[in-house]
Amino acid sequence: MSYLTPEQQNVVDAPMVPLCVIACAGSGKTKTAVHRLVRMRRNLGASRGRVALLSFSNVAVDTFRKAYADLANGLPSSAGQSRVDIDTLDGFITTHIVRSHSHRSMKTERAPFLVTGDEAFLENANFKFPTSSFPRSIKALKLSVENGKAVFFHEFNEQKETVDASIARNLIARLGRTGAYTHDLGRYWAYRTLKEQPKLLAALARRYPHLVIDEAQDIGSVHQAILELLIGAGSCVTLIGDPNQGIYEFAGADGKFLTNYHQREGVQLHSLEKNFRSLPGLVDVANGLCNRRDKPERLAPDTLHGAFFTSYKHDQYSQLITRFQEAMSAAGANIKRSAVLCRAKKLAGTLRGDEASVGQGLVKAFAAAAVLRDRRKDFLGAFHRVAIAVVALLDKAPPGLVHQITQPSSDPIGRELRKVIWAFTRDPATGLPSSSLVADTQWHTQLLARVRALLNGLETRFNLKQGANLGNKLANKKLPNVPLASTKDLENSDATNLRIDTVHKAKGESLDAVLYITTKQHALALLNGVRTEDGRIGYVAATRARDLLWVAVPHSALKELKPTLVAKGFKEIVG
Ligand SMILES: Nc1ncnc2c1ncn2[C@@H]1O[C@H](COP(=O)(O)OP(=O)(O)OP(=O)(O)O)[C@@H](O)[C@H]1O
Image (tube, rainbow, N blue to C red):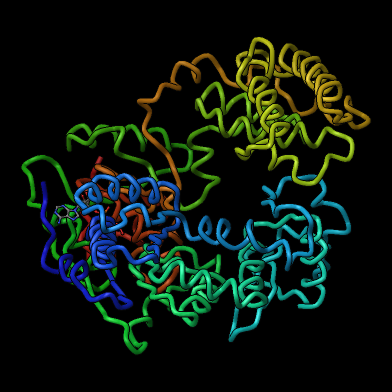
């Protein structure tokens, strides 16, 4: 049983006013937020208002829910312990605004639905907007709110290009009339709905007099605009986060809402500066990277620990990972609670070997699904790819069909369809062929026959007609004359393998040992500190480590980077 520190307790005991809690990495934001939530419930007693605790990932939400369920047991029955909602910020917005009220603003008869972005109808010319180079699908349309006005843009080659507001609005309205919205546009519709329906806004603020937002550095400008409306209507909003871990600037979250929040009248500022996660050597390095003076709570053990650097050659990733695993053993790190982290999705994917980059078009999607299922045991990832590919093979698939198949719903047809696609995905004997078959002969022949059978079944049972040219769409191109996944790969696929992931995926986690593989640019950014997004991404990677951190830099950049690495407190691994 651990107790709250005085700084954590101050947050929990604060009056029922908006708080701005700036917290360092590993400072126990989760524990503090849940204790605060319980205290708020106790203070509110039997009053009718609800409290929402909102974060940004499903993992965080699960953790909060479990922790609240444990703690809230001690609440008196008069405290209304069930009048709490724990969700993602987008989940909250979708449930309480978009799905239930936005159909009026969207001018649709249907219940609004989220598209995954892979639906074929989104590629239709009606749903494209012009750019300086070529027309792009509405799924690439993004927006931010600046000075109370929506600004539309898209990104190409990491550059932002503004999209004419009236073109964007017309396009969004056209998609809206089908009932569809993308992730970005869901927030747009939520904002518009609250602006257009003041009674709804007032009712929502009355129902949620208190909102607590965790990871508040990730609040984007449209999220902020929605929260500002709720604040204006009377909701009391508390923000908890670490500005040094803001790694969604590309998605419009620059962390300023959190950093400046305490300057508003009536907002109380708190800070958490004790790091419970990392050993002292690692906290020192983290402090050097972000210019803070956070204090470690843990004591240094006798086993190997600390922050190290090494170099790697591009054709020797596996040797690097093997060396790291040896160090992990010396440090007593648990393989299931350790990871190799990369900045780029692509490198993480290549190192994991989870995408079959063979085949072309839809065959490529089926091949990737087979490898995901057989090698990574990632059935959900495989299922999504299969659903998208199957829908793309239909003639005029109804809008929202991929969503209907992949998202749980009470709609009986959606449920039945989901079962059929699941059965196809799961079973290598009758459905998606095994990745151990030779790709361009056995595997492709089976794929063609079974997809044909699947499509016939969909036509008979669900009246979904198959499109023309199946043979062309599933052509035997770019498939090798070897199995998609070798037997050795399949043998190595057990769950004891060291996890390889992106930094974004590991955000919020505590890991015994971390190997952060960097490019020269990413290593420089890490060492230059948290002013840039790449610097903050490096900081997030480094601060996940409890006991052991390795930063691996390209061999060609070692000489140049070494003095700064040493100056920042990293020790060199020789050999
Ligand atoms: N008062 C406490 N006593 C002992 N352990 C604590 C206390 N508060 C938090 N911890 C532990 O500290 C660790 C880090 O907590 P948590 O994961 O909530 O950090 P965080 O603030 O969210 O960090 P980050 O922002 O870096 O993800 C957890 O293992 C948690 O159990």
